Amino acid sequence: STMGVYAAFTPVEMTGGSIDAAGYAFQTRNTSIEPAEGSTVEISSDKELFYTFSGSDNKVAGGSFDVPGLVKEYTSSADDPSATTITGGTFPISPVDYVPADSAAIAYTAANGSINYVVGANDISKVAQSAAEGDEITVLTGDVDLSIPVDGVTISNEGSGDVTVNGADVNKGDEVVTHIHDAKKTEAKDATCTEDGNIAYWHCADCGKYFSDEALQNQI
Image (cartoon, rainbow, N blue to C red):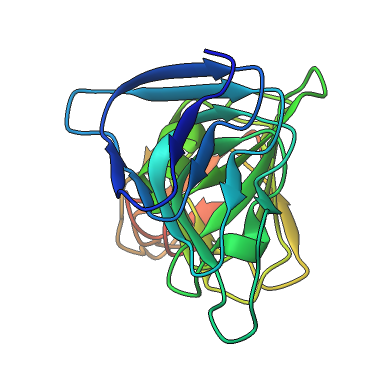
């Protein structure tokens, strides 16, 4: 449609489907976008996602968005301010200004240079699981626990939250590159009069590290 959704007073809920608008996707006061289980939301517009009125309260909890901007105010009032809250979804531009403190957001740069911004633990987890060698993930805000099953993905922490990658901490300002250990076990043996003994340990020849446990969490 050309106009998208217009509802100056009526609340709008979108739990599935798509919108392709030449103008603003939503000219609304109260819109909630949250894909139902098993459903997807896809929104494309030539103008901002939300065109807001005074007192607008719009929420996004998921979906895929192809928009040049997120919010443009039509009317505004200091006595009746508008709010936009984003706790999930994928965007071509940074939504960090609208992400609350208890949510997380990342910038995901594919090896080909394309960038997407991803919000919410579930969406971020899916991106991490599908990451490929040469991709980069920058944590912008919030606590993030990433499980990345391949080598060569660069993760940096530019936020102030707790970030872990495959069980290892990534402190604020730090950067790590994933490495999946191919560790071989050496069995424990007792010392003799002629030979030293050793505990059981696991060694990854690729990176040279030794571990005391099969989960490769305790480096020695």
